[in-house]
Length: 116
Length: 105
Image (cartoon, rainbow over the protein chains, first blue to last red):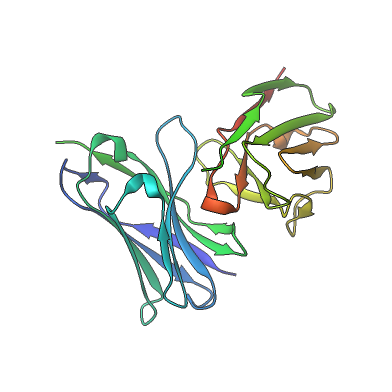
């Protein structure tokens, strides 16, 4: 069965770039959309953006142009880059598979703290 | 943007109770709504998609209904494993409701 695993630094300094990678096992990254969703401590879920296998990308307008999501099919991974990080970006970050606009498979999540 | 509002924010119930959670959209969204369950420290789990379709493996005590701007998630007989936080999600712009925590009464 398909499994997702996030990896990346747990601590990022303010103004630096938050970078995470999601490794997909048990199936190819093709033919689905691959999203990042985050959850600040004690708060709700916020969709960040997705990369669709045909190359289409989209992101939450609230994050303006700080977000970049890419896919590496050779490694079966997809990545998130969020620049100019602030304390407001502190959250658990989930990588998620999307199918027909819903999120059916989630990674376990990784906590990222933005602090000096 | 379409805003999703859940009610109540917290719900206290007992095992065996019938529980209903409501999700209201700021404008009509047809049937493009999903529900997720999240337990503390865990990733959310898809329960229902397209308003009323049960995800594979989800117990039949969970059901979804609604149309237009008002949607509901119903648990017909609350089980100990169901105490969790529930989120609705609209397909357009992937927005989530703020969550409903179902706690033990």
